[in-house]
Length: 244
Image (tube, rainbow, N blue to C red):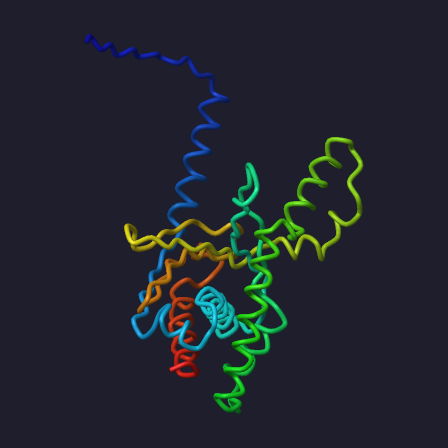
């Protein structure tokens, strides 16, 4: 079977050439500033979590919160992807793992006067229970993010956007500094993706029976990826000290 190659020579004006040059400069600036850090934590995994009847996913999400608090001493909007495949054409809903309960554990574990281990474990179990409830609600169509997104798109088409969408609090709520998604497969070790905001972290993570792993991406000019990985390792060690 014959194969043919066709080449087309484009005639570009100066305006088009300038756009291409600017795009190349912007692309290089972004890619050069992208940082990737990896953590493989071998002390525990799914089995230890199940032994204590806590969700492995909730433990990972709790570790992400503790790590960010250790590094920056503040709590931020967090995104976790939740599948809505139970519905026809279902894709994802947003699950928000940063809660009052996770904040309480972050403060306890980071405190110089750390409470008793049993006290923290009880709080960890409360985080796990709430985490499971939020995951179930999001998976069963009870989330609010996709609903509000659809309403905003319709409002923009009609030229009448409610004040909710221009409120600074709404913008802050949807500025996902921590964007997370899990990838569990025996065929793949880990997966990764970029941050969704300039000052954010893209966190791809995996959970195995006896180990945990995460790849964290960030932009060097706006955040500290290496520092976050160090804090994440310490956060997992703190949680293991409570659960072991």
